[in-house]
Image 1 (tube, rainbow, N blue to C red):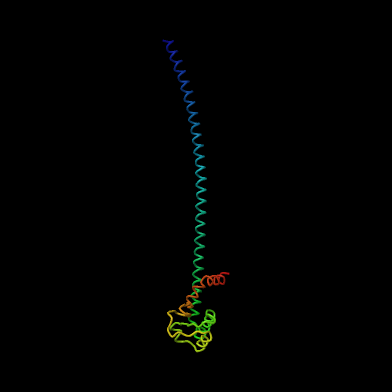
Image 2: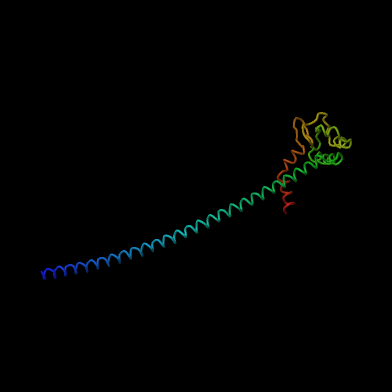
Length: 192
């Protein structure tokens, strides 16, 4: 039995050594696999961090751009509102001027829009017909214009009639016609 015991001990010793070698080799593979996985995880984390930083920067840039656009839109709206207020105030000042100033302004407009050498008719609003000065009537006659006794349905200004054609020279129509030029002039005056 002593020989069998020795043989068994030798086999067990050899098996134990092989098992230790296999276990050591497996531990090496496991350690290498863990190191490789850790390196890949670190690389993936670094890549994810870069993507997150890039996405964050792009998001912040978009938000800054949107904020800047909103500020410009608000500023533009305020500018347009102010220009509209000034235009409205100018219209109200002209249409609400005292009789002498108002008809002096109308006389200048009539001279500008009247057709030279043609006889025509001018229609005023009912408000203006009620307060028309004699000097205005005389200037109309000098321009070959007769005053219509029928009121035009306008607030201020006049309607010129030549033959069957009417020209709307109401202050509202003149302001609308010159709106772009007025807005440009007001913007230049207010905002330089």
